[in-house]
Length: 258
Image (tube, rainbow, N blue to C red; front, side):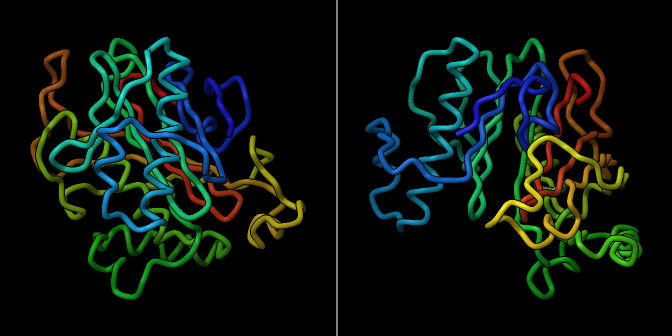
């Protein structure tokens, strides 16, 4: 399990969040991890897959909080299944097959944060059309012709998940996929931290590319946003992405640029 302060050590998540955040990621599950009783009660009827992703996600979050000097405690879900962080903390947890991660920061350093991870594969049939705007679909089609090793439809979906995770703690209400327009900026490939091209067992995409692919994105809110602590209204969000090891990882940090 990799624990890192962004900008100091390598890592997928560490490459897309700022130094104000503490990120922890892992590519395996901690089968010996012990949950707090209140957390364990939430999993009474959970299948094994759900138990593993929940448990390892909480382990990542607690290790990140420990780096901030916050004592371990149960991380229970709110009404929309969002993690209820300790007072003074903002954070986000994500999990997908073969990857779990969490990021936390003091709320004096960041206003909100949202991360998401997805496999670098196509979205299920019909999903992209339901979650994207015409402008986003046109961009993804053009990008796929330039760089087919990246599944841009999935990347846009991943970015929108990060938007929602950043939005909800501030607005406390739902944000539909069609209520934020994503614009992506592709930096191309580079020898980014965490790249594993050529290492046996890593993704075919990474092996072909030889490098990680990185870039940025912005989200223009198409509905009125919440009022921020400084009195301004939230209208746009900005984030970063990395594609490597068969994964797409996106992050938005509001309050400091990555």
